[in-house]
Picture 1 (cartoon, one colour):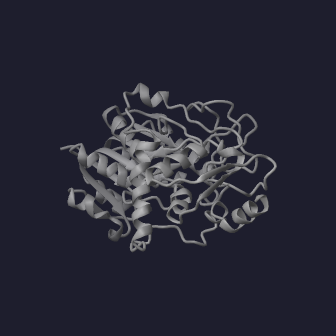
Picture 2: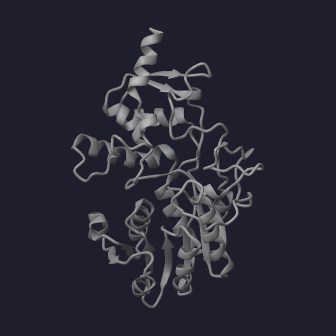
Length: 344
């Protein structure tokens, strides 16, 4: 039986990958710090939890044992993390390292976390320029991308068969920041009107965790040192995403598509973008990668997961805090109602 070890395997991408591989007949071990985060369905299916902190090289080596067919690193954020990965990858037939589209810069040096929105002038391929490598706080807005670049360089310069995967706006069951909540909550609250800034035209390519899992299985079968974009086969706009989620929930609302005359902070969504951000995934497809499904098909489980939590009182504590500053601008009902009242 083929064996896989997933570092950070209890998170959204790790869970999706473990489920995908177990279903395909792999023996799967996942590492994490808290066994309570191990999904019961994975344990029931035969996946094994191994307590190991990502920074504990000795614990990771024990989890690896004599080697694996596939090593997946879902929590590699810095060059130091990548250097810890290399001795493990040396004993893996194939390794997948999860990076991010946040590494890319446009012709003016703007990127996903810059004050000025990037304009990539078309679909982003893997040879698009990236930020310079950095070693600042990787959890900061300024440090996330540069640290990912530094981690990528350590991995790729090793000469080991490590595939660096660059996803965008990952969605799926187990998300710690489920962007789809901005529309799911509106449906649960029975909001009758949906306001969308810029007419909901913003596009930032989503990536289903289950599609990342399928790509990981692809690179497991074809080891190599490479960079691959990972994204859903379609790139829906914010308006299209709102309609997909409303349809899934059987909810209807009146759409108010705002233009430049409306307040700039009204009708915001997590997919707002002055210029489309779309990943070219042709290199992944060339490896015979087949996505699990498009956005509508792959987001369904996450939507159902969120709805179930919302309707059952959220006993597992998966829903965003009502005061989470990330979500507050997207769910400002008072501002919306005031604007609608002025128009009536």
